Amino acid sequence: MKVLLQPLRSKICFALLLLFLVPSAQAQQLDTIEWAPQGSTWLYHNFCRWCREDTKVAYEGDSVINGQLVKRMNLYGRNYICGPDTNGSGTWICAPVIDRLVQTDFLFNRNDSIFWFKNGQFELLYLFHQTLGNSWSIPQGYPFNTSPCSALPNKDSVIISKVDTLTFSGKKFIGYKTNSIHNKWGIGTVIQNIGSLLCPFTTALDSNCSAYSSNAPTIFSSEGLSCYYDSKRGYIDFSASNHLLNCHGEITAVYSAERNKDLSFVFPNPANRFIEIHCADFVGGEIEIIDVLGRTQQKSMLNSAKQIDISELPEGAYTIVFQRKSQPAKTLRFVKQ
Image 1: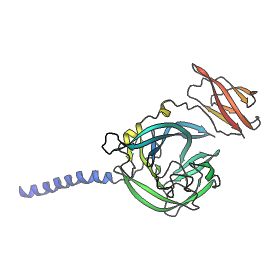
Image 2: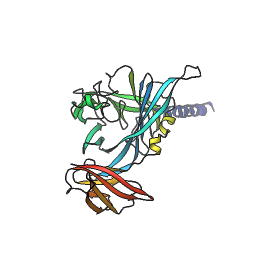
Image 3: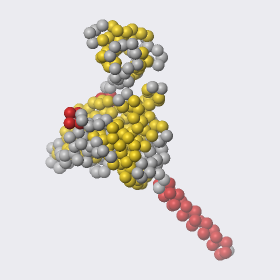
Image 4: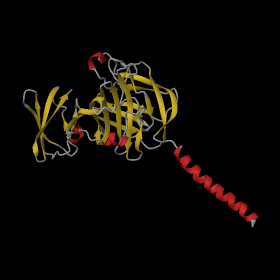
């Protein structure tokens, strides 16, 4: 009997060992989920002594540009005024004072390369699955102050100086530390299939241009990417401090700009041959294009692709007028190059 029990005990111990090891092994697996699944949202934080600025980038639909299916990313900004709680607890609180839809950007993924529609063409933004020493060219981004940055070039290059495994919210990711070759534009550390920890898109590295710069005044500190969400990964806290107390609450907070947004727009803008009207409640039918002197330059019926041929229009600024469901006529503006 003892001879039979010994192998049985060994099998039980081995089975129990597997129960402990399998979850541990699963927890150590690297993230392999694709970039920007449904619901992807990035939240970036900046702080000064009496203020806080949030930037939320949200994937909110798809569009087609020059035959390429792209993800439409709406960038929202929210400003806060901060100070000590009046109840004497010493707690530092921040109250939102203004929020807005800053801009809409368009990106797509091809073979581990993320492209950004910038200046009328697709520019390479990120490269994933890279090795130490790899480099690529990046486009100019969005400086905070335009006048001191006007002399900056519209291109720079980054090189991978370190490849590391990083853990956030119990999940492991590959991180690429990048350095700007010309120290004009940068993207900081890039998390594979997520994006930059430093800022949305590229940022100026001159302290007069960008609060994201490592040379920025000490009164204004950047926490960078604080929180991320998508339908496959769930919520991931990238915060390096305790500024972000509730990742779920921060991501799901509805800015008034989101609640009241009118996402009607013309794309591309400026344009030289074709433009597309993007409007959720557009009913189709006739559109009218008017120049700056109020003269009708073109009338046409919009096709199913919502494209308008403007190749015959002279260069200049124009207004498009069209009808929407149960609403007054809508006007949009564009520039013909």
